Amino acid sequence: MRPARHDDLPAILEIYNGAVLHTTASYDLEPVTLESRQEWFGQKEAGGWPVLVAEEAGEVVGFATFGPFRGKAGFDGTAEHSVYIREGVRGGGLGTALMAPLIAEARRMGLHVLVGGIDAENAGSLRFHGRFGFVPVAHMPQVGRKFGRWLDLVFVQLILDEEKSEGGAAPHGPAQTGAR
Image (cartoon, rainbow, N blue to C red; front, side, top):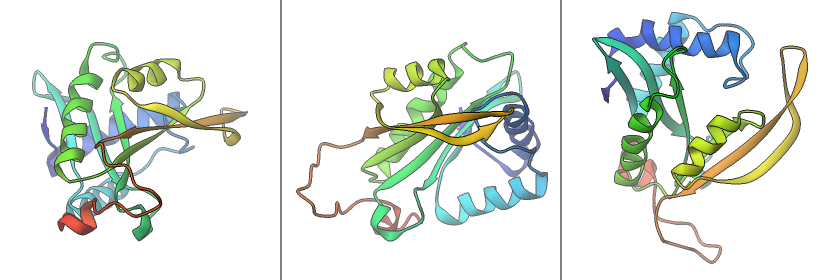
């Protein structure tokens, strides 16, 4: 596991587009371009958001990241994460190897909550997130459409610290730590 570099973008693009074309891990309907991934990576770098890659035998086989949730200042203590593993090597522990440092980085940055959006039929991803303490907090029926059918989305969340607030804002997140 290591931070991603610009020269990792073609592999990240291939992994992501594989998920776009063959799974409901992403609700994108068409493959994205290298230019859009370069812009995405630039936004991650400019915002101080991590992009981690898993590498085996010199080849990038997975990536994980998080970034702004909903783009509003009131959500600065919350980030939405993604983990993608290349087809053919899923289930071998790479997701775990990426998620653990991703959660550690979220804590280091002072975030309060990590959120993930998961297709409701993706039982493997729901179990995977449960092993890290993520809990389902919303089930949104038929909010997506892909492969000719309606898809349900489940939001899961992990509270990263013990701070509980009675309606007040937590002093956390990249905006307060200078990371954004």
